[in-house]
Image (cartoon, rainbow, N blue to C red; front, side, top):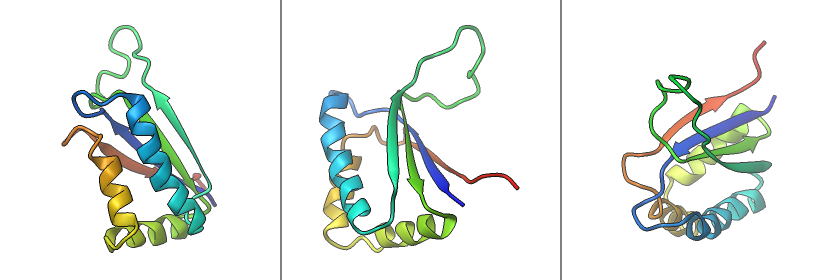
Length: 112
């Protein structure tokens, strides 16, 4: 059963998407090489008219990272949380391009 980590975030002041993508891809590539992740999609928010989506937190980008299972997501989380090299530097390089306090995450899995 796959699991998808969703991230809603805004880039830091003065950081372009073209600057963020290489830092994210280096982080992602390492996790892929370690066998934690399967794929990703990075999308730019397209606001809807009226009040549709008004209850969501403000964000510019939506990132989806796919895992083979909830267990794979959990193992990846533990790996990143250990904060050891090389993931420490890759994670920090990516996070330095995101506005502090502007990232929101949630995990989804298929319903029964």
